[in-house]
Amino acid sequence: MSDPCFPPLVGITCCLRPADHAFVHQVGDKYVDAVVDGAEAVPVLIPALGARLDVDALLGRLDGLLVTGSPSNVDPALYGGPPPRPGNLADPARDATTLPLIRRALALGVPLFAICRGLQELNVALGGTLHQHLHELPGRRDHRSNKDLTPAERYGPAHPVRLARGGFLQRLLGGAESIVVNSLHAQGIDRLAPGLVVEAVAEDGTVEAVTVAGASSFALAVQWHPEWRVRDNPDSLRLFRAFGAAARERAAHRMDHVTERDLSRVAQRA
Image: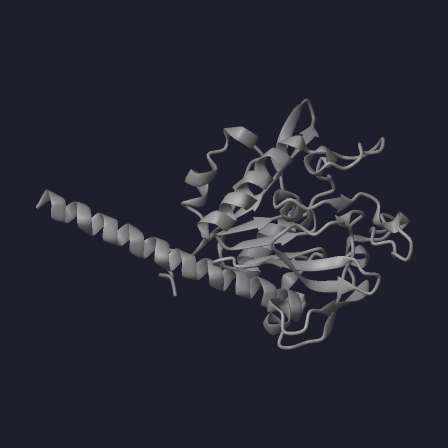
C-alpha cells in the first residue's frame, strides 16, 4: 500500500465548453466526489488541451485515469461514421485529448476507468465504432435520460445488465449474475474494438461494460454512471474501491522508483 502521506493521484478528464465570452474546462463534481470518496484518491483535473498536452509527462505523474461522461459525443469522423445530425453536441478539444490519453495510459500501465462517453472513447481509441442513435435500432430500448425529471430521478435504477460469466466485472462484484444500472446515454458501441472484452450486456443487446484484454493494470469501462452518489450504491462503490486500489498500487511503485532514483543520485555525488 502507498504511503498515506502520498495518496494516489487520479486524473479526471474535462470537457471544453462555451461560457460567457469565453470557454471553460469543466467536469461535474460527481466525478470529483467519486474519486475522493470512492477511490480514496486525490483528483487532478485534466484540461482539454489536445496536442498541447504532454501526455507522457502527465501520465508519469498520475496513478490513475478517470475518463468521464459528457453531454457531447465523439466526432464520428474519428471512427468512419456518418456525419452527425443537426443539434449534435461536439467537443473536438476533448476528442483530441482523451483518445491519446487512453492509448498511452494503457501502454504505460496506468489504471483506467472510463464512464459513458469514456467507454465510447475507449472503443473508438482502439479501433471500434459507435451507434449514434441507439433508440432507433430495432429491438433496442431508449437509453436516453428524461430531461424532465430531477437529477436524482434521472440517475435512478433503469434496467438490469447481465454480467459475463467468469469475467472481471462479475468477479469484482462478488459473482453476481446481473445488476441494475442507471441509463443516460444516446450512443453506444456498434463494432467492438479489437482487444476489448465484453463484461456486461443489457437485455436489448447493448454492450454495457468492457475490459481491455491483456492490460497490465485495471482497465474497465462502463456505459452507466457509477459515479452518481457512489457511497449510496454498493456495486458502484466496489468499482471505485477497486480502481482506487489499483491506483494505490501504482503510487507505491512510483514512489519506490522515485526513492531509488534519489538514492542513486546521492550515491553518485558521494
